[in-house]
Image (cartoon, rainbow, N blue to C red; front, side, top):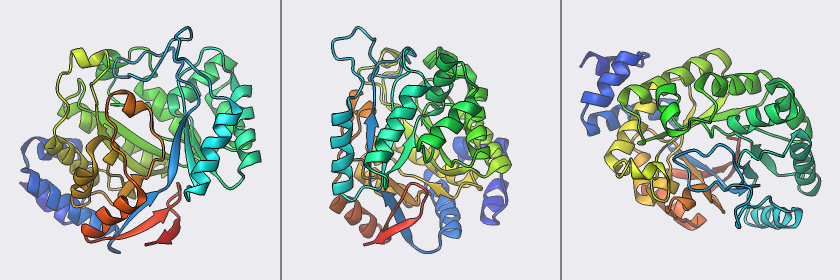
Length: 355
């Protein structure tokens, strides 16, 4: 295949060539190409990870995504908005465990305006000035702007002033509106997701990009997703990392339509293609939360240079019945056994300590 020669030569491949690789290349060839690209970008034989905690400030959500098992209506008996004492305890535990950040996300609550989020951030930064807040995905930011009658730019500016440090790539799922209409009809469309990240980058906030594949998407949708985020990265340079993971159908409405999870082979193919195609993304994360430790370890030879997060707490994927857990010692062991040096980093990929 001509495209293989291009990858080996370090040349950029286009959408058509990416599709050809995803459809036709055998798994080991894909893995070898992705590993070569990874080693070219990261010759130092290290694998990074962050210690943080996912904190979901509410499970009340009006979006009702068909793939989500976490959301609740306002009247549900187990609906909640986090109280300050619980929040303080969770962050204090994170700091005690060597954590440097929290991932702060929640549902699209119909009654919470910008003031709630500003107070939340000021509380966190007042109590724990050292903690980095990686928070509020693009759908949350658009929702806050609508509830508060503000522009997306004004919302991001105010959140940043209140203490927001960076924005996660959640809410992307597949950036193909053909699929979005079917799996999350009430969620923001591709253009809006991209505009939130474009605006954040312009205002000096770094963000990540994610992809959830394996629901109702096909090869073309996956490549389309990679194309639009690569184009935005060409424009702004504001993405720090890309994190692909596979849809978890259990306990979800969409799960009645999508019976089978994407296989480990499919995960590795998509991951490898991501590393090859996203030549302007510095980091690709392995997703042990959905794949488990062994598959995440294999992912380090299929293009990933980052092991993601120790993730002291995770609720959204767990609601879909997937509950992989991993202590720090196990992350270190898996990285070392794969032949790399483990390095703890912060959310912005600055080194914290080596192991």
